[in-house]
Image (tube, rainbow, N blue to C red; front, side, top):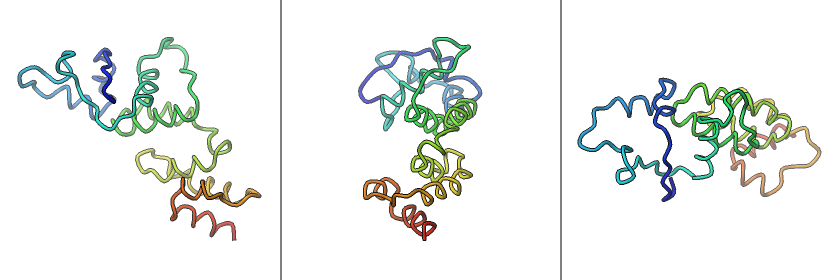
Length: 159
């Protein structure tokens, strides 16, 4: 991940909960299996190191009886990786921890609802409504963050 070698137990990734990794580890190895050693690591291209670290905090918690103390941004990273790799239980946990985002950050909630991998399509209407009801119009930075199509939806609802 970003030219950094992470040495983590395979067990968390081999769980039946992950559609991607369970299939990957079931394939018969041809020669030395990818991820079997430091010389032959499993490369996770296009994954951001900080996002992966957040995901590892949830996959391998220090205290299994407590939720990791992560920020909204970190839980969003966990949600995106869990959705990408098919970790249904971690995705559910991330969504539960993001429950208040709709009220705290409706802009972020719109972006999450617009991503079909998150499974949060139901957040779109209330999040757009929250943005439309606030006193201040969308700032140029918010328009850029949302993209033109979503920003136009919000502006249309404001009218």
